[in-house]
Amino acid sequence: MDFKLDIIHHGAVNGVTGSCHQLMIDSENSLLVDCGLFQGAETSASGEDDLLSIEFELSSVKALLVTHCHIDHVGRIPYLLAAGFTGPIIATEATAALLTLLVNCNAGYSLASC
Image (cartoon, helix red, strand yellow):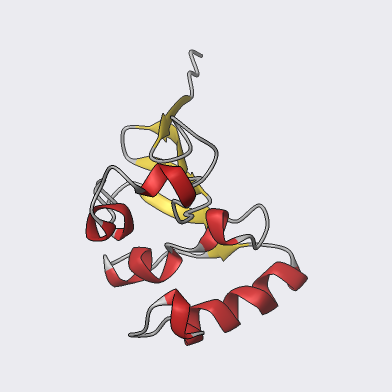
């Protein structure tokens, strides 16, 4: 049986912020690892809306795995949810508690208002 995984990087490519990586299991199933904000110098070349939007197809994403609750790893989760992601979010109990605060805080507000 041939089994080949592929990783697509949607963030943290030219720098270290905006961590968002899609582990492709096959053409219909993938796992998203983190969905973070771009920060600092990595935000200067693009408009803010471009950096917040989810510009990749979500139909194959079956779950989101959150490694830890730093903003550059979780900051775009509210935008991921707004884009239609409905799968489970997998995290440690402590990270899940912090994520609840983040998502509730960001429901219709900018991060600066939290």
